[in-house]
Length: 190
Image 1: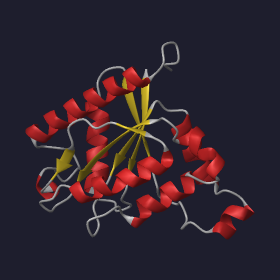
Image 2: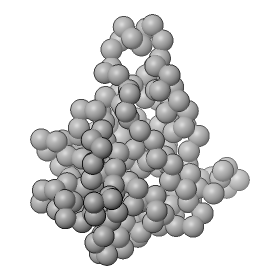
Image 3: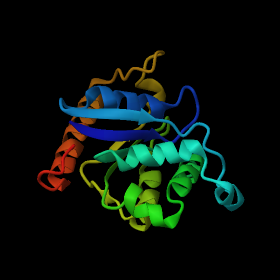
Image 4: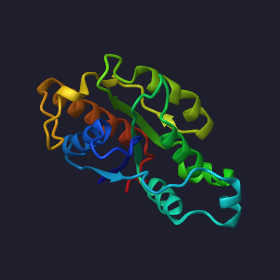
């Protein structure tokens, strides 16, 4: 079984990116489980807080990512870039620096995103690239999943209704799962 930790970079209850993450989990291929994690409750990064002890939520999330086969980041786009709450979580997850290799090093990672606007999170997805380099992840550069007009593609319960986007999400998850399988050395698959 391939395990992917999925994170949506928005805390809003009606987040389109959380809806897209749930759709990705639902549409993942057989043999792939997407475990949805949350950024809720992670405090603003503060070196004094870190010196007093790593917040338990951060430690738990680090351990979940370190134990997974891949990481799926579902990013909103705020002012043409990465949302602060998402970047803050990654900053915590990369502390102390000695943990970066355990949590992120060589880990397959994929990006997707949804927005009510027309740009489909293209700028935010591009803004993640230097962060990926710093973390030493192995980004998957398959077809991008950029959901525009997100306010019109989900129903009131948060289910993805648009059949074209459902197909693209299913294909995205299938291809990302195949990438993870190719990345795992023989005999080291969970």
